[in-house]
Image (cartoon, rainbow, N blue to C red; front, side, top):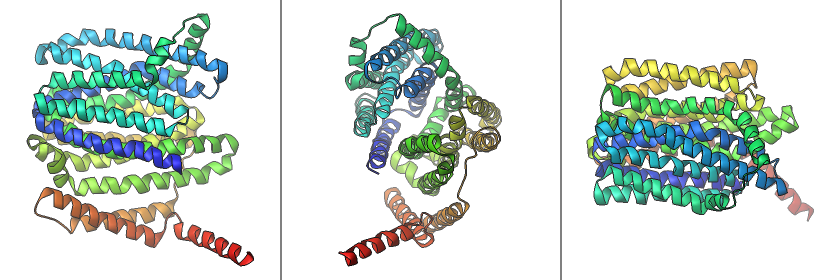
Length: 480
């Protein structure tokens, strides 16, 4: 329970700070510059997944095995793989610089390249702390990363209104944070020998197949923005990014926190006893939905006041139109990514996740091509929803047939659906004259309605558990 609380905090507090940085960036950068900022962050993330994912996945997999004296072998191989991948990343992205520089300038293009190594270093140190079961350190690193986005990004935007300086400041902060978090020490102790080269080959053999699926999933978010840029302009990218990121920062963060806390227990149950796994999976799916559903409903029903509070005026109308579609898309994305895709991981059938991700990319690309000319940024959000919906169904069907069946507790789902409907009705029935009071009133009304229905229907049998605890305590008191 302590670790769950820390992991939730490690995602919730940074998400709140990220909303603050979003509010500053959308207000003090022009709508077009915010669109280019979104493209730069998205491209750096995609390059990081393509080139670094194999190393991270392999480190995560081999860390429990390589303990004691063998830990240095894994550390050196991981650092060497990181440095090689970072160098390749710069070389791969460098030829793209003239394409960006032609329209937006050399400063923007070089700043985009500078983001990649810092982001990769932060991801590696996050994996290190997570595998070492250090949730407090993980929390501190995530908080430091997000404070950097707020200070180096939002504050620099406020002071200078310069996109290039914002990107360079964020890149510098990310790199320094990763170095102080332990990457600098790892690099300083780097040794390269024949056994390290063999270890790198072993890590590549394990990690590269997993990279394909991760890269395809990451490609969806990158593809959305680059297709918008190609078919419309940077301002439209900014409209989409403001609405989508507002939702993704919160829903994605909470889904990730619950997954981080539950994953070790699920893996242990799977390795010990298959019969123990099903009830654990049912409970995990119900908890994941119980947390993400009210957030998705709340964002969708409070889209207008949310956009007015957290998004700059130039992007507010379209961001408000994007948010409801983005809420549904990210809800399905969290359910797919953090629950349904566990089927492929448990069965070690990576082909399944790669196949689903590939089909999803094709669907999103086709829908974007059809919908962007008609509906602009809203069309991109609708394309994302369509892609995630198909991918979620495919993950469930393929996982059930070829991997591990991912169960749901139907009574829990019914109770949660009723609570979500009550929340939506409560939020729709109240309003206020100005954005902040409207957001607070809607959030309070919806939250109270959701909690009341949960207490009444008791999907997690909290009342039953409490009665058992009290009865045992009473019996112990009588015996005494």
